[in-house]
Length: 361
Image (cartoon, rainbow, N blue to C red; front, side, top):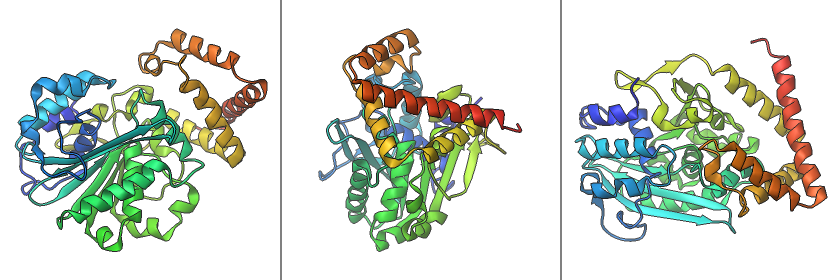
């Protein structure tokens, strides 16, 4: 089974020989997860660094907080040696994370002789701020990260007259679409393509808006067959389903998506579990009022953002530690909030049961 790690090593043709594509986009929207602050010129500063000039001794440090650390290191090692990528200029590095503002944002720019690629970071597994932003997409817009993405894209596009690609994985895909919708008309005309790799959708009124419809044909959305995140909320662009070797939520990881003959391995339909989750979540969302959802999100993340809760216990499947910390947090919660949280979660379980029982699959 080959992945973008193999592609980053084996596909050495230039972008003039083989034009920029969805697989290239997934690679560049994966690199933005690496913590390269201080090594890439920041937004509003001058200069750039070539990919091939990154200090390889720092690669382990760049990936230190990522769940698939070894895979990310393998990816960046292949990219900096590959002539297809290693002369790309990296600049405009910008990140902001704030508990008070509920924002987890990072973006950077890759520039070739013929185009630029604006890459927005998605949801980091260990960042509860990023997860709360994802939940807030259901009840609020624009979010602070969406506002930042608009300002970032406008600033970058002022600096060049080259054609532009915009993309991201997970929440980064949502930001790529949102910023492209809201940039100036002259900028929208210069955007060649918008890549959304398993990113969530939007509230219904946004998908029905004129701004969304104006860019819809430029959006390329790819999702793993077991997608959860990419099916959340509303979207109207065509979707292509990718085979992934991940199990459960690990289907979401871009480093698990299958590649064959220089392209993704496409499937005809989503997995049964993915379809059932999508139906259950949609039914649940329709039942809840905006006020109920807002209170639920605040209550849930009062637990997840507490000092007692260790976010690294979740991806490492340390369930005993996770449930112990949740129980401690629930003890400190007032009875009204606790009852509401439990009730809303029960309603999700009921929705899931009904969808499974009524399923014809």
